Amino acid sequence: MLEKIGLPAKPSLRGNTWVVDASHSQGCTSQFTFINRKHHCRRRGGLFCNSCTRQKMFLRGQGDSPVRICEPCEKLEEAARFEGHGHKTRAGRGSLKLTSKPEDEVLNQILGNDRKESGQEPNSNVVASI
Image (cartoon, one colour):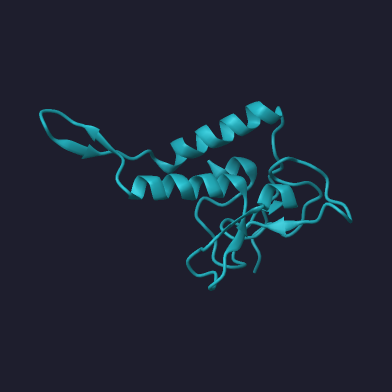
């Protein structure tokens, strides 16, 4: 699902699969300028503007301080943490069942809502670095 906005399916290790260059943010599609700078999402490697990467999180393998991530990754991380705490529903006579949404379903909801609000499709220029 993240491939639709030009991001790899799995979180990238630092520098493995990053967008090398782009002229527009993959989130809001605003053009990069001297003032509107480029920033990489440290979770997936996408290239975004400052307003699309205001969130910071501690990510495994990314050091001891919080790192910059994009809005879709923040929502995905929050959903994963919520699911990890065991969102429970009734499964029948007195039993409880843990439910979880597949990652693609969560991303469809996130990206579908974001695109409807903005009315724009983001760029998809992913280049794997060596």
